[in-house]
Amino acid sequence: MFTGLIEATGRITAIQQHGQGVRVRVESQQLDWHDVKIGDSIAVNGVCLTAVVLHPQGMEVDVSSETLDCTLFGTYAPGQMVNLEKALLPTTRLGGHFVTGHVDGVGTVERIEQSEEDWQLYVTPPKNLVRYIAPKGSITIDGTSLTVNAWHGQAFRLTIIPHTRASTIIGTYRTGQRVHIEVDIIARYLEQLVRPPSEDTMSAEKLRLWGYEDIRRT
Figure 1 (cartoon, rainbow, N blue to C red):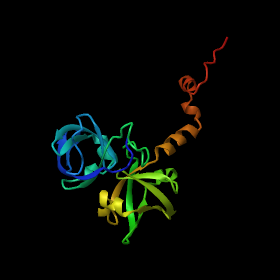
Figure 2: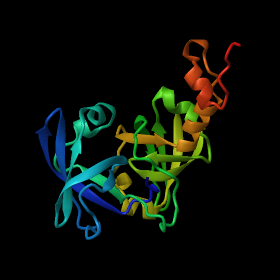
Figure 3: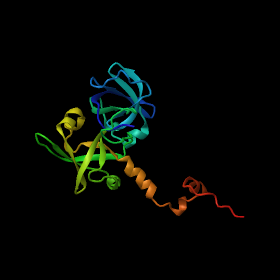
Figure 4: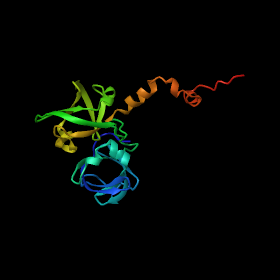
């Protein structure tokens, strides 16, 4: 679990085929690596990955074929800048929102309105994610926790303050950039809870899970 508050940026320095997936080396001089252990989870551009090899200023992670299919990692090359965040601790200040590191889809930066202060970023999400994105709600873009300001046609607008531009890779975005999107976990669970069960999926086991006792004929 993460907060969406980016701790550092880094770069992908190597990508090698590894079984059906790839092994990726990520390096950063900004991230404090001293407490990172093999097996720890680190969000790389919002994707929860496991450190399998450690280096003085970096790590190697395995990216499965499934993750390659649903994220942009299959398009990345050495030199790609990435956002980095270590998993939160029980004592961590939750300044962002709960982020799982499980990407829901890929969106496109449609427009950037730049000024000396705030930037306005317009992102078009996949159609299947639209229902989860609410004005003033939280959303994660490449692992960065942001607030949706409003919808403008098919794109939602985000305000990017100078600190966020300077401390994440958002400052490198250009029109047409593809980005990872993770919607608010509360919206996903709420939909599952309120969705009525369909007849073809009804079973005694599901009834027990929902708190109903077995109905037995006497």
